[in-house]
Amino acid sequence: MKSAQCSLLKICKNGSVVFVELELPSPVLTAGQFLLARNQRDILPAVLFSTDKRGQYIFPMNSEFHWEVGDDLLITFPHGHGFTIKPDMRKLLMISQTSSPVRLFSAARQILENGGEAALFSRNLPDQVPPEIEVLSDEQLDEAVLWSDAIIGDAQLHHMDFWQGFQTKYQLSARQSVQILVDTPIACDGTAECGVCAIKTHAGWKQACSDGPVFNLRDLEF
Amino acid sequence: MNETDRIVLDLPSRWMNQAGTAGFSPGNQLLPNGSIFVTNPVSLRVRMPSADRNLLPFPGGFLLHTGLPNAGWKAIRRKYQSHWHQSDSPIWIHVISQDLAGLEGIVRDCEEIDGIAAIELGLPPACPRDWMMQLIQSARGEIPLVLHISLGEDLSVLSSLPEAVSAVTLGTPRGIVPEGENGRLIHGRLHGPGLFPQMLNALQDARTWQIPVILGGICNQKDGETALNNGAAAVQIDHLCWQGGLPTGL
Image (tube, rainbow over all chains, first blue to last red; front, top):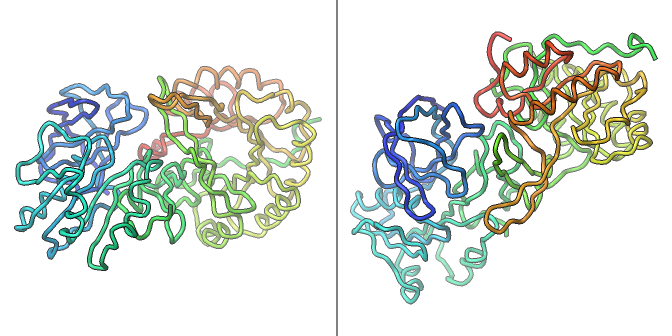
Protein backbone atom coordinates (compact mmCIF):
# COMPACT_ATOMS: atom_id res chain seq x y z
CA MET A 1 0.00 0.00 0.00
CA LYS A 2 1.26 3.46 -0.87
CA SER A 3 0.35 6.84 0.51
CA ALA A 4 0.61 10.31 -0.97
CA GLN A 5 -0.53 13.86 -0.50
CA CYS A 6 -2.26 15.41 -3.47
CA SER A 7 -4.32 18.45 -4.40
CA LEU A 8 -7.96 18.40 -5.35
CA LEU A 9 -8.01 20.06 -8.77
CA LYS A 10 -11.62 19.94 -9.85
CA ILE A 11 -15.08 19.01 -8.60
CA CYS A 12 -17.89 18.17 -10.97
CA LYS A 13 -21.38 17.25 -9.85
CA ASN A 14 -23.68 15.27 -12.10
CA GLY A 15 -27.02 14.52 -10.48
CA SER A 16 -26.33 12.54 -7.33
CA VAL A 17 -22.81 11.71 -8.48
CA VAL A 18 -19.69 13.74 -7.75
CA PHE A 19 -16.49 13.48 -9.76
CA VAL A 20 -13.18 14.81 -8.50
CA GLU A 21 -9.87 15.30 -10.26
CA LEU A 22 -6.76 14.67 -8.22
CA GLU A 23 -3.23 15.77 -8.91
CA LEU A 24 -1.64 12.37 -9.25
CA PRO A 25 1.26 11.67 -11.58
CA SER A 26 0.05 8.38 -12.94
CA PRO A 27 -2.86 5.96 -12.73
CA VAL A 28 -2.82 4.38 -9.29
CA LEU A 29 -5.75 1.99 -9.52
CA THR A 30 -6.91 -0.81 -11.75
CA ALA A 31 -10.59 -0.91 -12.62
CA GLY A 32 -12.67 -1.73 -9.55
CA GLN A 33 -9.95 -1.01 -7.01
CA PHE A 34 -10.36 1.99 -4.72
CA LEU A 35 -8.31 4.56 -2.89
CA LEU A 36 -9.00 6.10 0.51
CA ALA A 37 -8.83 9.90 0.64
CA ARG A 38 -9.35 12.41 3.39
CA ASN A 39 -8.54 15.96 4.21
CA GLN A 40 -7.66 17.17 7.69
CA ARG A 41 -11.29 17.75 8.64
CA ASP A 42 -12.52 14.32 7.67
CA ILE A 43 -13.38 11.81 10.36
CA LEU A 44 -13.47 8.89 7.96
CA PRO A 45 -11.75 8.64 4.60
CA ALA A 46 -13.81 8.66 1.42
CA VAL A 47 -13.71 5.67 -0.92
CA LEU A 48 -12.88 6.76 -4.46
CA PHE A 49 -12.96 4.69 -7.64
CA SER A 50 -11.32 5.59 -10.91
CA THR A 51 -13.27 6.44 -14.05
CA ASP A 52 -12.12 6.13 -17.68
CA LYS A 53 -10.61 9.63 -17.55
CA ARG A 54 -7.06 9.94 -16.27
CA GLY A 55 -6.88 11.56 -12.84
CA GLN A 56 -10.67 11.52 -12.41
CA TYR A 57 -12.32 9.66 -9.56
CA ILE A 58 -15.90 9.15 -8.55
CA PHE A 59 -17.00 10.07 -5.08
CA PRO A 60 -19.36 7.76 -3.18
CA MET A 61 -22.95 8.73 -3.73
CA ASN A 62 -24.10 8.33 -0.14
CA SER A 63 -21.36 10.34 1.56
CA GLU A 64 -21.46 13.86 2.85
CA PHE A 65 -19.43 15.93 0.44
CA HIS A 66 -17.60 18.97 1.77
CA TRP A 67 -14.32 19.05 -0.11
CA GLU A 68 -13.25 22.19 -1.97
CA VAL A 69 -10.96 22.74 -4.91
CA GLY A 70 -7.43 23.24 -3.61
CA ASP A 71 -7.87 20.96 -0.61
CA ASP A 72 -4.85 18.84 0.22
CA LEU A 73 -5.88 15.23 0.49
CA LEU A 74 -4.01 12.37 2.07
CA ILE A 75 -4.59 9.27 0.03
CA THR A 76 -3.66 5.62 0.40
CA PHE A 77 -3.83 3.21 -2.52
CA PRO A 78 -4.45 0.78 -4.06
CA HIS A 79 -7.02 -1.09 -2.01
CA GLY A 80 -9.04 -4.18 -2.76
CA HIS A 81 -9.28 -6.44 -5.76
CA GLY A 82 -10.64 -4.98 -8.97
CA PHE A 83 -11.88 -6.47 -12.22
CA THR A 84 -9.73 -9.12 -13.88
CA ILE A 85 -9.40 -8.10 -17.51
CA LYS A 86 -7.71 -10.82 -19.52
CA PRO A 87 -5.98 -10.08 -22.82
CA ASP A 88 -8.30 -12.42 -24.74
CA MET A 89 -11.44 -10.57 -23.61
CA ARG A 90 -12.85 -8.86 -26.67
CA LYS A 91 -16.57 -8.37 -26.11
CA LEU A 92 -17.36 -6.69 -22.80
CA LEU A 93 -20.89 -6.24 -21.55
CA MET A 94 -21.41 -3.84 -18.64
CA ILE A 95 -24.60 -4.09 -16.61
CA SER A 96 -25.03 -1.40 -13.99
CA GLN A 97 -27.60 -1.67 -11.22
CA THR A 98 -26.49 1.40 -9.29
CA SER A 99 -27.02 5.13 -9.70
CA SER A 100 -24.01 5.45 -12.00
CA PRO A 101 -22.15 2.98 -14.23
CA VAL A 102 -19.06 5.17 -14.46
CA ARG A 103 -16.92 2.96 -12.21
CA LEU A 104 -17.15 0.27 -14.89
CA PHE A 105 -15.80 2.48 -17.65
CA SER A 106 -12.11 2.09 -16.84
CA ALA A 107 -12.47 -1.65 -17.47
CA ALA A 108 -14.14 -0.86 -20.79
CA ARG A 109 -11.25 1.43 -21.64
CA GLN A 110 -8.82 -1.44 -21.27
CA ILE A 111 -10.86 -3.67 -23.56
CA LEU A 112 -11.26 -0.93 -26.14
CA GLU A 113 -7.55 -0.14 -26.15
CA ASN A 114 -6.90 -3.82 -26.84
CA GLY A 115 -9.09 -3.61 -29.93
CA GLY A 116 -12.21 -5.05 -28.33
CA GLU A 117 -15.79 -3.83 -28.05
CA ALA A 118 -17.88 -2.70 -25.09
CA ALA A 119 -21.61 -2.35 -24.51
CA LEU A 120 -23.52 -0.89 -21.58
CA PHE A 121 -26.91 -1.59 -20.04
CA SER A 122 -27.93 0.87 -17.34
CA ARG A 123 -31.09 2.65 -16.28
CA ASN A 124 -29.02 5.56 -14.95
CA LEU A 125 -26.94 6.81 -17.83
CA PRO A 126 -24.48 9.64 -17.13
CA ASP A 127 -24.53 12.77 -19.28
CA GLN A 128 -21.59 11.53 -21.27
CA VAL A 129 -20.96 7.95 -22.27
CA PRO A 130 -17.77 7.41 -24.29
CA PRO A 131 -18.87 7.13 -27.92
CA GLU A 132 -17.05 3.82 -28.37
CA ILE A 133 -19.40 2.22 -25.83
CA GLU A 134 -22.69 1.00 -27.26
CA VAL A 135 -25.67 1.81 -25.05
CA LEU A 136 -28.23 -1.00 -24.97
CA SER A 137 -32.00 -0.96 -24.57
CA ASP A 138 -33.99 -3.50 -22.56
CA GLU A 139 -34.75 -5.45 -25.72
CA GLN A 140 -31.09 -5.73 -26.62
CA LEU A 141 -29.89 -7.11 -23.29
CA ASP A 142 -30.60 -10.81 -23.90
CA GLU A 143 -28.78 -10.75 -27.20
CA ALA A 144 -25.84 -8.85 -25.69
CA VAL A 145 -25.42 -11.46 -22.95
CA LEU A 146 -25.00 -14.15 -25.61
CA TRP A 147 -22.70 -11.90 -27.64
CA SER A 148 -20.32 -11.07 -24.79
CA ASP A 149 -17.31 -13.05 -23.65
CA ALA A 150 -17.02 -11.08 -20.40
CA ILE A 151 -19.64 -9.42 -18.23
CA ILE A 152 -18.98 -6.91 -15.49
CA GLY A 153 -21.51 -5.14 -13.36
CA ASP A 154 -22.30 -3.42 -10.12
CA ALA A 155 -25.00 -3.62 -7.49
CA GLN A 156 -25.80 -2.43 -4.03
CA LEU A 157 -25.37 -5.07 -1.35
CA HIS A 158 -29.02 -5.21 -0.38
CA HIS A 159 -30.30 -4.95 -3.96
CA MET A 160 -28.83 -8.00 -5.62
CA ASP A 161 -32.11 -9.36 -7.04
CA PHE A 162 -31.06 -8.82 -10.63
CA TRP A 163 -27.88 -10.85 -10.25
CA GLN A 164 -29.53 -13.57 -8.24
CA GLY A 165 -30.39 -16.18 -10.78
CA PHE A 166 -28.62 -14.32 -13.60
CA GLN A 167 -26.46 -17.31 -14.39
CA THR A 168 -29.41 -19.66 -14.52
CA LYS A 169 -31.53 -17.33 -16.61
CA TYR A 170 -28.91 -16.86 -19.26
CA GLN A 171 -27.27 -20.28 -19.00
CA LEU A 172 -23.84 -18.71 -19.20
CA SER A 173 -21.03 -20.75 -20.64
CA ALA A 174 -17.94 -21.53 -18.59
CA ARG A 175 -15.90 -19.14 -20.73
CA GLN A 176 -18.13 -16.19 -19.79
CA SER A 177 -16.75 -14.43 -16.76
CA VAL A 178 -19.21 -12.38 -14.66
CA GLN A 179 -17.66 -10.01 -12.15
CA ILE A 180 -19.70 -7.80 -9.84
CA LEU A 181 -18.56 -4.69 -8.01
CA VAL A 182 -20.59 -4.83 -4.80
CA ASP A 183 -21.51 -1.48 -3.27
CA THR A 184 -21.27 -1.65 0.49
CA PRO A 185 -20.07 0.71 3.20
CA ILE A 186 -16.28 0.56 3.49
CA ALA A 187 -14.48 2.06 6.45
CA CYS A 188 -10.87 1.06 5.99
CA ASP A 189 -8.40 -1.09 4.10
CA GLY A 190 -9.27 -4.25 5.98
CA THR A 191 -7.18 -3.76 9.11
CA ALA A 192 -10.21 -3.25 11.37
CA GLU A 193 -11.84 -6.54 10.28
CA CYS A 194 -15.03 -4.97 11.60
CA GLY A 195 -17.36 -6.78 9.22
CA VAL A 196 -19.40 -3.79 8.08
CA CYS A 197 -18.49 -4.62 4.47
CA ALA A 198 -18.95 -8.39 4.84
CA ILE A 199 -20.06 -10.26 1.73
CA LYS A 200 -21.36 -13.83 1.85
CA THR A 201 -19.66 -16.19 -0.57
CA HIS A 202 -19.64 -19.95 -1.07
CA ALA A 203 -16.22 -19.89 0.63
CA GLY A 204 -17.54 -18.07 3.70
CA TRP A 205 -17.76 -14.41 4.64
CA LYS A 206 -15.36 -12.10 2.82
CA GLN A 207 -14.53 -8.44 3.34
CA ALA A 208 -15.27 -6.15 0.42
CA CYS A 209 -12.54 -3.79 1.59
CA SER A 210 -9.77 -6.35 1.22
CA ASP A 211 -11.18 -9.38 -0.65
CA GLY A 212 -13.36 -7.32 -3.01
CA PRO A 213 -15.14 -5.11 -3.77
CA VAL A 214 -15.21 -7.03 -7.07
CA PHE A 215 -16.41 -10.62 -6.74
CA ASN A 216 -17.05 -13.38 -9.22
CA LEU A 217 -20.79 -13.90 -9.55
CA ARG A 218 -20.31 -17.65 -9.20
CA ASP A 219 -18.72 -17.13 -5.78
CA LEU A 220 -21.50 -15.01 -4.31
CA GLU A 221 -24.06 -16.67 -2.08
CA PHE A 222 -27.46 -15.00 -2.14
CA MET B 1 -13.31 -2.38 49.47
CA ASN B 2 -9.74 -1.21 49.26
CA GLU B 3 -8.48 -0.71 45.70
CA THR B 4 -5.19 -2.41 46.54
CA ASP B 5 -6.99 -5.75 46.96
CA ARG B 6 -7.61 -5.92 43.25
CA ILE B 7 -5.39 -7.83 40.81
CA VAL B 8 -3.07 -5.13 39.56
CA LEU B 9 -3.49 -4.30 35.91
CA ASP B 10 -0.12 -3.86 34.24
CA LEU B 11 -0.17 -0.86 31.91
CA PRO B 12 3.19 -0.73 30.13
CA SER B 13 1.58 1.84 27.85
CA ARG B 14 -1.35 4.09 28.65
CA TRP B 15 -2.38 4.08 24.99
CA MET B 16 -4.11 1.20 23.29
CA ASN B 17 -6.57 0.59 20.51
CA GLN B 18 -10.28 0.15 21.10
CA ALA B 19 -11.86 -3.27 20.49
CA GLY B 20 -13.20 -3.50 16.97
CA THR B 21 -10.74 -1.13 15.36
CA ALA B 22 -7.66 -3.21 14.55
CA GLY B 23 -8.64 -6.83 14.04
CA PHE B 24 -7.63 -9.83 16.12
CA SER B 25 -3.85 -9.64 15.95
CA PRO B 26 -1.37 -6.79 16.26
CA GLY B 27 0.43 -7.71 13.05
CA ASN B 28 -0.86 -4.75 11.09
CA GLN B 29 1.74 -2.20 12.27
CA LEU B 30 -0.91 0.16 13.62
CA LEU B 31 0.53 0.18 17.12
CA PRO B 32 3.92 1.32 18.36
CA ASN B 33 5.97 -1.48 19.93
CA GLY B 34 4.89 -2.21 23.47
CA SER B 35 1.41 -0.74 23.17
CA ILE B 36 -1.42 -2.85 24.49
CA PHE B 37 -3.45 -4.51 21.75
CA VAL B 38 -7.17 -5.11 22.30
CA THR B 39 -8.74 -7.70 20.01
CA ASN B 40 -11.99 -7.34 18.19
CA PRO B 41 -14.93 -8.70 20.21
CA VAL B 42 -14.79 -12.49 20.50
CA SER B 43 -17.79 -14.67 21.30
CA LEU B 44 -17.94 -18.30 22.29
CA ARG B 45 -19.66 -19.30 19.07
CA VAL B 46 -19.48 -17.88 15.56
CA ARG B 47 -21.38 -14.62 15.04
CA MET B 48 -22.60 -13.61 11.59
CA PRO B 49 -22.54 -10.02 10.33
CA SER B 50 -25.78 -8.22 11.02
CA ALA B 51 -28.24 -8.18 8.12
CA ASP B 52 -28.57 -4.40 8.41
CA ARG B 53 -24.88 -3.69 8.95
CA ASN B 54 -24.05 -0.13 8.07
CA LEU B 55 -21.73 2.82 8.41
CA LEU B 56 -23.54 6.14 8.69
CA PRO B 57 -21.86 9.49 9.22
CA PHE B 58 -23.35 12.24 11.35
CA PRO B 59 -21.89 15.63 12.32
CA GLY B 60 -18.97 14.92 14.62
CA GLY B 61 -18.79 11.20 14.07
CA PHE B 62 -20.34 8.10 12.60
CA LEU B 63 -22.46 5.14 13.56
CA LEU B 64 -21.07 1.68 12.94
CA HIS B 65 -23.32 -1.34 13.09
CA THR B 66 -21.74 -4.70 12.32
CA GLY B 67 -23.23 -7.31 14.63
CA LEU B 68 -19.70 -7.92 15.94
CA PRO B 69 -19.05 -10.82 13.56
CA ASN B 70 -16.32 -13.25 14.52
CA ALA B 71 -15.46 -16.87 13.91
CA GLY B 72 -15.97 -17.93 17.53
CA TRP B 73 -13.38 -18.45 20.24
CA LYS B 74 -12.03 -21.83 19.15
CA ALA B 75 -11.41 -20.75 15.56
CA ILE B 76 -9.92 -17.43 16.62
CA ARG B 77 -7.64 -19.07 19.19
CA ARG B 78 -6.47 -21.56 16.56
CA LYS B 79 -5.70 -18.82 14.06
CA TYR B 80 -4.13 -16.19 16.30
CA GLN B 81 -2.64 -17.99 19.29
CA SER B 82 0.86 -18.03 17.82
CA HIS B 83 0.55 -14.36 16.82
CA TRP B 84 -0.37 -13.38 20.37
CA HIS B 85 2.44 -15.48 21.76
CA GLN B 86 5.03 -13.82 19.52
CA SER B 87 3.71 -10.29 19.84
CA ASP B 88 5.66 -7.52 21.56
CA SER B 89 2.31 -6.07 22.59
CA PRO B 90 0.43 -7.36 25.63
CA ILE B 91 -2.84 -8.79 24.30
CA TRP B 92 -6.23 -8.07 25.82
CA ILE B 93 -8.98 -10.39 24.63
CA HIS B 94 -12.32 -8.57 24.36
CA VAL B 95 -14.97 -11.19 25.19
CA ILE B 96 -18.69 -10.78 24.59
CA SER B 97 -19.89 -14.27 25.51
CA GLN B 98 -23.19 -14.42 27.40
CA ASP B 99 -22.81 -18.13 28.15
CA LEU B 100 -21.49 -18.41 31.69
CA ALA B 101 -19.81 -21.80 31.27
CA GLY B 102 -18.48 -20.80 27.88
CA LEU B 103 -17.11 -17.56 29.28
CA GLU B 104 -15.33 -19.43 32.04
CA GLY B 105 -13.86 -21.79 29.44
CA ILE B 106 -12.54 -18.89 27.38
CA VAL B 107 -10.88 -17.39 30.45
CA ARG B 108 -9.27 -20.71 31.41
CA ASP B 109 -7.95 -21.03 27.85
CA CYS B 110 -6.55 -17.50 27.95
CA GLU B 111 -4.67 -18.27 31.14
CA GLU B 112 -2.76 -20.95 29.22
CA ILE B 113 -1.78 -18.73 26.29
CA ASP B 114 1.42 -16.73 26.54
CA GLY B 115 1.00 -13.10 25.62
CA ILE B 116 -2.54 -12.61 26.87
CA ALA B 117 -2.38 -9.98 29.60
CA ALA B 118 -6.03 -9.31 30.37
CA ILE B 119 -9.64 -10.09 29.58
CA GLU B 120 -11.84 -7.17 28.62
CA LEU B 121 -15.41 -8.29 29.26
CA GLY B 122 -18.00 -6.43 27.19
CA LEU B 123 -21.26 -6.00 29.04
CA PRO B 124 -24.42 -6.39 26.94
CA PRO B 125 -26.83 -3.47 26.56
CA ALA B 126 -29.09 -2.87 29.59
CA CYS B 127 -27.20 -5.45 31.63
CA PRO B 128 -28.77 -5.80 35.11
CA ARG B 129 -26.36 -5.81 38.05
CA ASP B 130 -27.26 -9.42 38.97
CA TRP B 131 -26.33 -10.66 35.50
CA MET B 132 -23.19 -8.54 35.48
CA MET B 133 -22.10 -10.12 38.78
CA GLN B 134 -22.63 -13.61 37.33
CA LEU B 135 -20.58 -12.70 34.26
CA ILE B 136 -17.80 -11.35 36.47
CA GLN B 137 -17.87 -14.49 38.57
CA SER B 138 -17.44 -16.62 35.42
CA ALA B 139 -14.72 -14.41 33.98
CA ARG B 140 -12.60 -14.12 37.12
CA GLY B 141 -9.29 -15.91 37.00
CA GLU B 142 -5.56 -15.49 37.21
CA ILE B 143 -5.29 -12.72 34.68
CA PRO B 144 -6.73 -9.25 35.23
CA LEU B 145 -10.35 -8.65 34.27
CA VAL B 146 -11.38 -5.34 32.75
CA LEU B 147 -15.08 -4.58 32.56
CA HIS B 148 -16.25 -2.72 29.44
CA ILE B 149 -19.42 -0.67 29.72
CA SER B 150 -20.82 1.82 27.25
CA LEU B 151 -21.67 5.38 28.05
CA GLY B 152 -25.46 5.65 28.19
CA GLU B 153 -25.85 2.45 30.13
CA ASP B 154 -26.83 2.54 33.81
CA LEU B 155 -23.41 3.16 35.33
CA SER B 156 -24.74 2.72 38.86
CA VAL B 157 -24.28 -1.04 38.37
CA LEU B 158 -20.56 -0.34 38.76
CA SER B 159 -20.80 0.69 42.39
CA SER B 160 -18.88 -1.61 44.75
CA LEU B 161 -17.38 -3.81 42.07
CA PRO B 162 -15.86 -7.07 43.32
CA GLU B 163 -12.09 -7.32 43.61
CA ALA B 164 -12.02 -9.64 40.59
CA VAL B 165 -12.41 -6.55 38.43
CA SER B 166 -9.12 -4.72 37.91
CA ALA B 167 -10.36 -1.81 35.84
CA VAL B 168 -13.33 -0.44 33.92
CA THR B 169 -13.32 0.65 30.31
CA LEU B 170 -15.83 3.35 29.44
CA GLY B 171 -16.81 2.86 25.82
CA THR B 172 -18.63 5.19 23.47
CA PRO B 173 -22.44 5.10 23.55
CA ARG B 174 -24.84 3.35 21.27
CA GLY B 175 -27.20 5.43 19.19
CA ILE B 176 -29.56 5.58 16.24
CA VAL B 177 -29.03 7.28 12.90
CA PRO B 178 -31.60 7.40 10.06
CA GLU B 179 -30.37 5.81 6.86
CA GLY B 180 -30.37 7.94 3.70
CA GLU B 181 -33.59 8.91 1.98
CA ASN B 182 -35.69 6.04 3.28
CA GLY B 183 -35.11 7.16 6.87
CA ARG B 184 -34.87 3.63 8.24
CA LEU B 185 -33.44 3.78 11.74
CA ILE B 186 -30.12 2.01 12.21
CA HIS B 187 -28.91 1.19 15.71
CA GLY B 188 -25.23 0.88 16.43
CA ARG B 189 -22.13 2.09 18.23
CA LEU B 190 -21.28 5.78 17.89
CA HIS B 191 -17.74 6.89 17.15
CA GLY B 192 -16.04 10.20 16.58
CA PRO B 193 -14.48 13.28 18.16
CA GLY B 194 -17.88 14.87 18.76
CA LEU B 195 -18.47 12.43 21.61
CA PHE B 196 -15.41 13.46 23.60
CA PRO B 197 -17.11 16.07 25.83
CA GLN B 198 -19.61 13.44 26.99
CA MET B 199 -16.83 10.89 27.51
CA LEU B 200 -14.80 13.37 29.54
CA ASN B 201 -17.84 14.18 31.64
CA ALA B 202 -18.36 10.49 32.37
CA LEU B 203 -14.70 10.18 33.29
CA GLN B 204 -15.15 12.92 35.88
CA ASP B 205 -18.17 11.12 37.34
CA ALA B 206 -16.20 7.87 37.46
CA ARG B 207 -13.85 9.26 40.11
CA THR B 208 -16.19 7.90 42.76
CA TRP B 209 -15.84 4.31 41.54
CA GLN B 210 -12.50 3.74 43.30
CA ILE B 211 -11.18 1.72 40.37
CA PRO B 212 -8.86 2.52 37.45
CA VAL B 213 -10.86 3.81 34.48
CA ILE B 214 -9.80 3.44 30.86
CA LEU B 215 -11.50 5.92 28.56
CA GLY B 216 -12.48 4.74 25.09
CA GLY B 217 -13.51 6.72 22.04
CA ILE B 218 -10.33 8.78 21.82
CA CYS B 219 -9.91 10.20 18.32
CA ASN B 220 -6.79 12.32 18.56
CA GLN B 221 -3.67 12.76 20.65
CA LYS B 222 -4.89 15.96 22.32
CA ASP B 223 -8.08 14.36 23.62
CA GLY B 224 -6.08 11.36 24.82
CA GLU B 225 -3.69 13.55 26.78
CA THR B 226 -6.61 15.52 28.24
CA ALA B 227 -8.19 12.29 29.47
CA LEU B 228 -4.91 11.04 30.95
CA ASN B 229 -4.39 14.36 32.73
CA ASN B 230 -7.88 14.16 34.19
CA GLY B 231 -7.92 10.81 35.83
CA ALA B 232 -7.93 8.17 33.08
CA ALA B 233 -5.61 5.27 33.85
CA ALA B 234 -5.26 4.70 30.11
CA VAL B 235 -7.04 5.60 26.88
CA GLN B 236 -8.30 3.62 23.94
CA ILE B 237 -7.92 5.02 20.46
CA ASP B 238 -11.00 4.77 18.30
CA HIS B 239 -11.09 5.32 14.56
CA LEU B 240 -7.57 6.72 14.47
CA CYS B 241 -6.59 3.10 13.92
CA TRP B 242 -8.38 3.32 10.59
CA GLN B 243 -6.43 6.41 9.63
CA GLY B 244 -3.00 4.88 9.78
CA GLY B 245 -2.31 3.97 13.38
CA LEU B 246 -1.53 5.37 16.79
CA PRO B 247 0.63 8.49 17.07
CA THR B 248 4.29 7.62 17.44
CA GLY B 249 6.26 8.57 20.52
CA LEU B 250 3.46 7.92 22.99
